[in-house]
Image 1 (spheres, rainbow, N blue to C red):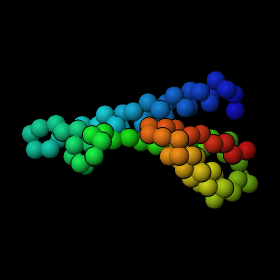
Image 2: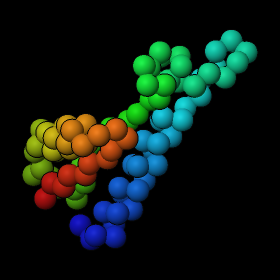
Image 3: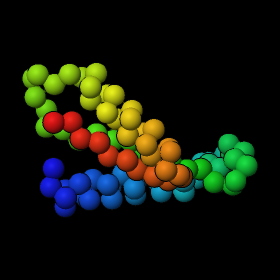
Image 4: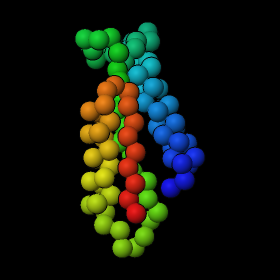
Length: 90
């Protein structure tokens, strides 16, 4: 994958992670931050995202694609809050 395309994908997922942390929920007639509603001890909600990129082919092993996304997710979780990790399956 071209470096520019990978950066675009990363940036898009990063924006999504940050939006998750900023979610507001309607509770009765008030807007409440998702973190307050969930009772987060840190007062915020974070998102770790693992994504996989591939060009679909008939011979792709679906389990391999899912495993790559799972590994990317655990890599994102291991590197901190609001992180995105990309993986690629050829």
